[in-house]
Length: 114
Image 1 (tube, rainbow, N blue to C red):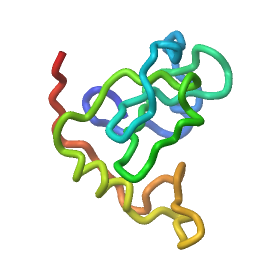
Image 2: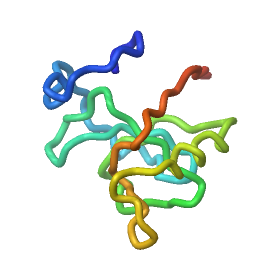
Image 3: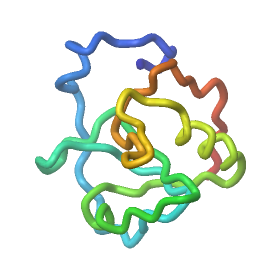
């Protein structure tokens, strides 16, 4: 999605035009509510994709790998709801992490505090 909320095609998302330097050594950990930059296995490949760690997860294996740059300070119930949507691979044995939701999920309003 671009800043106006318009969906990009898969082809346009395969390689970003912009990338950010890794800052995974900033001392911030992947705790519930953490906001972090998604990237490939290559260095400095963070761009426009991010994720929020849900309440029932502590993916410490991502500490020092992906840059944590923020934290949800209210509305974690919405993060939980998003983390529980059906995905093509969600089964009792597999929580579907990394899958695209079957039904589109949109963030309609976000407030950034500094």
